[in-house]
Length: 579
Ligand code: ADP
Ligand code: TPW
Ligand code: MG
Image (cartoon, rainbow, N blue to C red):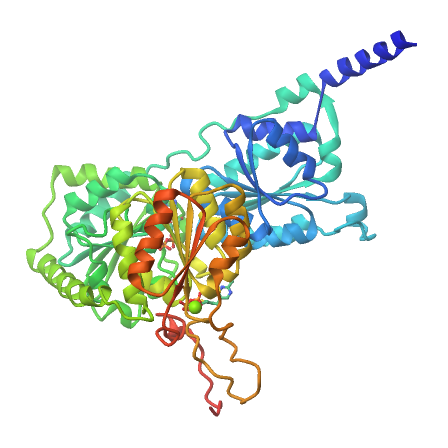
């Protein structure tokens, strides 16, 4: 009897040794392609997939909500140039992750959303399966590519396609649908292994055409008042040395978009950040590097751009970006590394610095504006205003240039963007192309996990609320994240009143005197309540030194902010409203 039992057991082992299954093929395919971190929320049908991934040595970070896991994956993609992977359950979990997938696509970040899905036969006949939804159809319009794998033998090719689609050309979000049944499918182990695909040269260099380089150089040479605009595509490209060399060799003033800050230090003599209005209005030739002429640049026209005629030179990997808003005189289509080095080669042969008059005009404006701002940043008002509080954080970032700054809110975002100087590439992560609230904690977690650097998250109190529960995740993984909540008691301000005179507070107002610091203490992190800029400095320095998960509740004057920060002009106005 005993012998028979042993015999049966041995046979089973032999059999499973020779087999693999969907679960393990997914893991092997990801690992083969160097993807070792997963941002996840468990549940049917992917709980065991997460467990097996962890058992195989992958890092599987579980979040409290899929949207935050998704934002984490999206920024992991931006920071590493490899697709960040978010994994969710079917229908509702998938939908929660989908916002982040669309966000990744909009921001040109490589990301893969892997969602488990229900039985195809039942979903397609709409017979009401557990968490039934035709996820592939829903995802398609919101991402760069969407794939479903039905046979375990196709997992290797499916994951290869997802990776290549996410990172090649203009990066973006890719959806990969894995039905529950697929994960349990078994395949002969040797056959399974040979079905895996290692993606070779996933984001190939794309060299600009020589005549396009000639054209770009001749337009740049015609300039009297040239300007370079660096966007987050330039930061993503990781061509840091060549970009810096191009700017410095050219002698042209440059303007970084918010996530391109630090590509060259914000204190660089050619930085025109503090003279933004002047350079946009007065420049005659503008070289755009990995930035789009979307709403953030007033579509390249109108009052912001002044009355001077402009000639644009634009470097982008996406040909259809050219002429999207205004005529591009010299399109340079290719990857930023190749395009920038092609321009640089040509400049080294023969280049004349831009007219000294223009450079001096920009430099003078920068100097005047910086000097005007300086005393406001040193103010010690209590309650703190945005300038006093951000002046304190500005010094901390200057002293800790390798820390990563995450930033969201309205006033908290707009003031921090202009006040806090950045010194290194890819250290500033913010609301991006959509101006979205809710990226904060997901970004902070992924930034800490992917880079191992300390993270400072500067959050409006409203902005923080969108992902605030993830402070438990931060504590659980003991991440070196210091969250500073700029607590002005509401959205834009805490002072609005209900116009009806009713007992509900105004639509933009939160609980008075909220203590966000005590939330952090609930999970074993450090919570600090501060009301002065000196206390703020002390608390943040202590957090950055200790690396302990910390939340600083910074009380900000509830009347200090303005409606929608600096983009109040985008609010539609009612002509009939009686106030
Ligand atoms: P910002 O918001 O900073 O202005 P955008 O997100 O609008 O930046 O623009 C980024 C641009 O960079 C996109 O048009 C994208 O196609 C482009 N891009 C991203 N990566 C690369 C790359 N490696 N080479 C060339 N262009 C790139
Ligand atoms: C997903 C609209 C833009 S800014 C903001 C909201 C709700 C919050 C501003 O208040 P906060 O900052 O964070 O307290 P501050 O310093 O001005 O008080 N939903 C999404 N995205 C956006 N952008 C909004 C709503 C919004
Ligand atoms: Mg607020």
